[in-house]
Length: 127
Image (cartoon, rainbow, N blue to C red; front, side, top):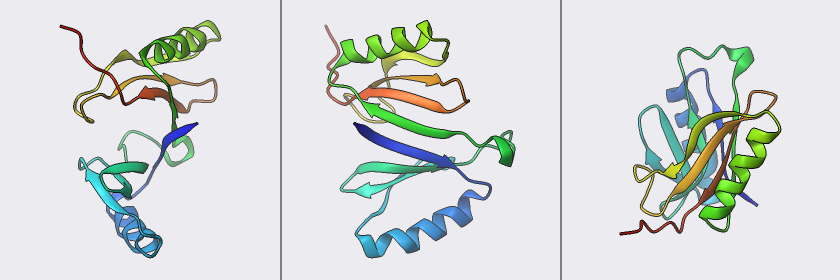
């Protein structure tokens, strides 16, 4: 059900140092780092993300939850259902090759301001 989740931090460098330390004994490490966000997990499969945004006040730090979708059609169905109940579209359904080949997702803002996503990792471009 849950593909990955992320939290926003007031001090990303401090948070990286903290999670580098506390997740290592559990066998997890930093497996991706984009500067403004980094992912922890095993063998290149990040499941827990940290990020920081200068324009996001501490009282409004959103949570990011990505739900695993079985295929691209399910990503689109999630998008349509979310729009129908009043969610804001953050990023319309599309491939996100900057994350990894096969990544196809949609990002929405739920009614409480959280960033929710539906994602499949098995997308293959046509043509």
